[in-house]
Length: 228
Image (cartoon, rainbow, N blue to C red):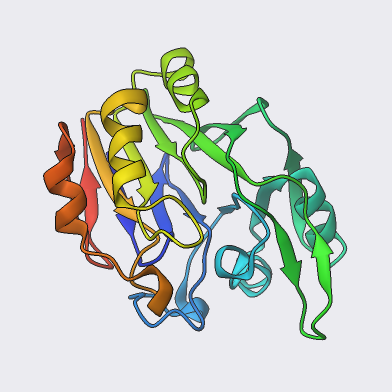
């Protein structure tokens, strides 16, 4: 099984001949290897409403007739933009062609600012537990450190791969992310995300790698983490 990283927090995978992309912030993301018009997706999964995560969702969904899976208030907003959506909430799990998606807590904020500069309430931010071909992937989403990461991992794990932010300023930084990996989540593989995209979140991922006890894969845009 492979999950590709495309810069910032953009992830994609194919399972059961189904293409999935998560938080497709492509336009305006200088680190990504993708072009929004070329993305193929059957499903788009969103962790929260911030523009650097919703990104190109509307165009990608319309180009591909894709279904958007998102926190319910964000799903409702996107439904109003003419998209096919599935709204979910904290603790809820849904089964799809590619596997299962469960929304879990994240500690952050969430709103979407439209082209007119109007901010829309998009519900609570969330993390994801993905079950893909029997493997467990924890996408923490944008979040600070919180103790229930341990509970999430214990009740949904063991976690094969964890994608975790290290950028600081808007999310946890290197030290908090290392604590989360070492003491709370304890995944087999940890992958740092949400760093270097903007000046306030510049970080050295090698610093994170050197502080964790588990395997770490530092991915360049377009590279994939492999696990079996």
